[in-house]
Image (cartoon, rainbow, N blue to C red; front, side):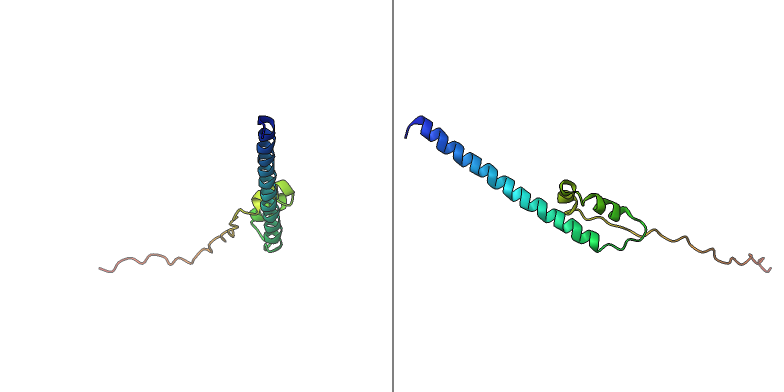
Length: 94
C-alpha cells in the first residue's frame, strides 16, 4: 500500500468516527428533548412558574437537548403565617 492509499484509509476511519460521534450526540440530544417535553407535560402549572418557563424554553430543540437532563426544583412559595393571639402579660404576684 502506498503512502497515499494509507492516508486515504486513515482519513476514512477518522471521518467515520466523526460521523458516529455526531450520530450518538444527536441521539442523546433527541432523548433530552423528549425528556423535556415529558417533564413539561407533567408539571403542575401553579406558582412559582420557574420550572414551567424553563421547560417552555426547552421546547426549542437545541435548548431542550440540554434542559431535558436538568432537575428543576419548583418549590412552592411559603404562605405567610397567620398572626396568633397574644395574651397580655400578667403581673407576677408577690
